[in-house]
Amino acid sequence: MSGEGRPGAAAYADDLKTFSSTVDGTKRQHAIVADFLRWTGMAANPKKCSIMSVQRDTRGVLKTCDLGPQLDGVPIPALGMADAYTYLGIGDGFDHVRRRVELAPMLTQLKHDATALLQSGLAPWQVVKAVKVYLYPRVEYALRHLRPFAQQLEGFDTHLAHGLRHLLRLPKTATTAFISGIRHRLDTQHWCDREEELCELFLNDKLGSSAHAPPKRRNGDIGSLWADVRGHLKRFGLQLAKAPADLATDTPDDLATDTPEQPLQLRVPHHDKWLGRGDVLRHVKLHLKHRHWAKWAAMPNQGKTARAHGGAGSGFLTRPCGREADFRFAVAGRLNVVDTLSALKRQRLRTHDRCRHPGCSRTETLAHVLNHCRGTMDAVHGRHNESLKNIERALFASSGDAKDRVELRVNQTVPSLAGPALRPDLQLYNHTKKTVVVVDLAVVFEEQASDGPKSSGLVKAATDNETKYAGVKCHLQRQRMDGPPLGPRLRLT
Image 1 (cartoon, rainbow, N blue to C red):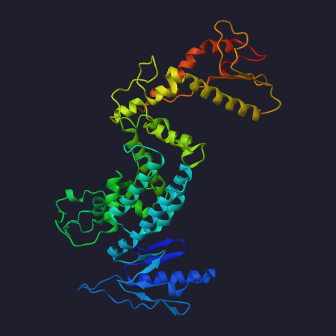
Image 2: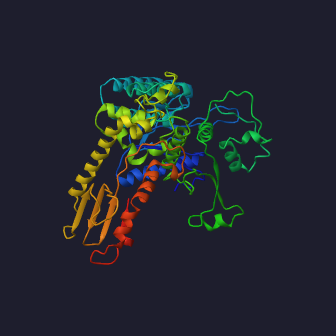
Image 3: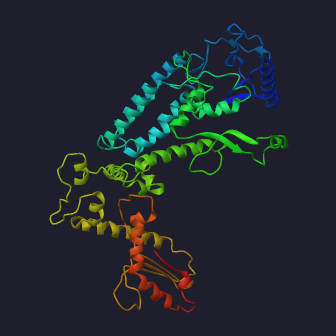
């Protein structure tokens, strides 16, 4: 609308910032804003608005700002390079050192608030929820617009990690994954009219490999936003690349050029499409979650159970789940740091890792205690029976269509089946629709050491049940319940 070749604007809440590389572009952008306010009937407070010039002349002297923009006849004040407009306690200026210092009291206050939460007596899931929805949003705007020192952020992260470890009674060895750029001397003749290639090499941290951009040994410049972008791309394992032309959105002039490509596009490993403005933040966050999970899964001991969790299995972290002791045990179990003899031997607190139950010579791992040890079989059977009762109550509560004649058999033999007296946990017969579902419940907690589906304890239990109840399946398929055979409609789980 402004006719500017490279217009720019930024917005946060009800604040708007426009910037242009020319004086005429700045005037046109201001006129558009004034017309929009007049057309909508809204008004802006000129005292809270400002204009700033950042251009310098050939001698390096800052040019004066004499544009004289007005809103409703009131002139907008001009700011100097050392001045700054303050929003949410954060100055939006160019003095990066002072702005970094401004963030220090805010992070210190966050440390105090985090300590108060950890000592408040709240349930652990409530503390995690409060940190997520209360503490971090308070500093979100500042982190967007300021570039704090690394030790400031690392200090807060370390403080929070130590507090959560103490709250959850985790050992010091428990992982926390659960929870300056180089300047270059450019050859101006070589890089003339090659700005896009130059930006791509710089952001992908490959500019140093070019003979036309040797790195500087010393520089007195302050860091830039693009140096931070390059550092984050390298840290997170991402790269910008050229995307093919989009036939649906590109103009005929764009497609007629020799290189109809979209430069500096981003793609993440888990998504097969190029990212746009609407989904880049969501997919970058998901990429970081995948990196944290991969770091967790790569750990030889704490990563043994990483593949068995996720989705609904992680909902208890921010929702009530019973007693605090259960919550702490669940978190420690996910990290495989429960004080079994195997874990204590890894920490060099015991000399052996054999099961402490008399007569058992197997290694005392968490999976062994929860599923296989003879000394805990009563608890294993009780856990299975309680889960079965919960499923039975849910089935009775949602009986379905009253017109269907449904029969539920719990821990009973299959009618008219000869041979071994097999007792599936659940048999759900629908005599109207001629269907039957046979369910044998398995509550397993096994170590899944690889990404292959065959290494999962649930897959192994399902395979054993299919072999165990093969005769039941054939028997039900041979039966005719006043209709066609049940073969295509039989489900065995």
